[in-house]
Image 1 (spheres, rainbow, N blue to C red):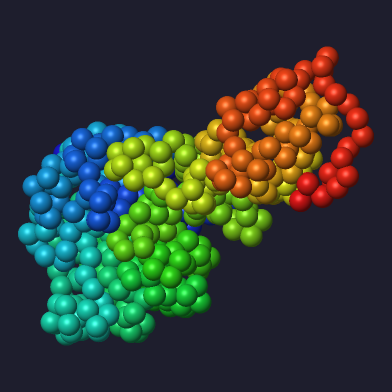
Image 2: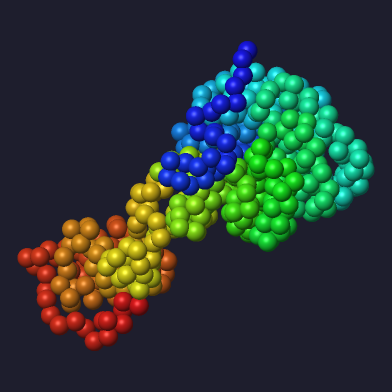
Length: 422
C-alpha cells in the first residue's frame, strides 16, 4: 500500500490561505479523549456515525480511539478508518512497540493514517507514574517515534503533562521526537493547569528549539475553564493544530470545545488572523448528533450550541434585539446551524417582546388588551418560569378574545407601561 502525507485540507501550517490568513488544523478527539469521560462511551457503530458527522463538519484529523485499550476500541478505530474518506484518521499509542503495532493494525484501512504516540515528560509523571529518569524518557521517545515512522510518514508525538514539565527538558524531548521522524509535536495541558501566559512561553520556547519544519499542536483541558483561551494563546505563539472535542467533552472537566474555538476565530477575525476548514453551519447539528449518540445533552447556557445561546428573556435585551440584532448577539444563529433567535417569555420580559410574540402568533392586540395579557403572562411566569406559545394563546383568548386588527381595543397606555420594558 502506498501512503501519501498530502491532504486537500492539510497544507503546511506556515503557508497562508487564499485570504492571507494562516491555516489552523482541527484535530478532533471526541472519539478518543472525549469518549474517556464517564458516561460517554460509544460502540464501534456509534463512533462511525459520529465520524461521518465530523468529516462533514470539516475536521482535518479524526482521532478514532486507543486501539490497544480494548478489542472494542480496536474494532472502532478500524471501522472509522475504513469509513472516513478525506480526513486523516489517528490512533493513539503509548511509547511502547506493542501499542504502536496495534494502532497500525487498526489503521490499515485508512486512506490517510496517523500514529499518535505519547509519553509523559514532567518529573512528577516520570518519577511517580512511569518510574523512569529523564534519560530513559529521551530514549523511549526516540525509539517509539522511529518505530512509528517506519510504518507511516505521518507521526505525531505528544509530551503528556507538558505544561508541568521542566521547559528545557521539554525542548529536548521535542527535538528528539522531531529528529526521530515526528511530523507533529503536541504539547498538552493534560490537567488544565496552565494560564495563557504559560502556554505562550512554552510554545515559543519549543518553536525556537525545533524550528519551522514541524507542526506544533495544542491539547488543552478545561479544569480551570481556560481550555479555549489556552488554545488561542497556543495558536498565537505558533501552534498550527488544535486538539479539541465537540461540546468540550473529555476527561474530568473536558477539553477545549471545538465549536467555541472555531467561532472565536470567526467572530474575532481582526484579532485572530487564522482560518480553519470547519463548516460552521454544521456545528449545532454535530453537537446534537453527539448528544443523541451518548444520551447527554449540553447545558442550556453552553456557548455556541446551547439551547439558550441565542435566547433572550430580559425585556431590555428583547427591546434591543427587535431594533437591531447586533445589540445582543455577536454571531448569527444561522452561522452555526441554529434555528434562529428566540425571544422567551418570562418574568423578566417586557411589553415589546410580548407584543412581538403575539404578532408572530397572528394576534395584534390593542394597548389595553396587551397590558392585560402582559400582567397575566408575568404572573404565570412567576410560577412556571417561562410561558410557552400554547399558554400565551390561551391567555389571549381569555383576556382579549383572540384579538385581531379588527377587534383590538386601542386606548392610552396604562401608567408605568414603559417601565415594563425593563
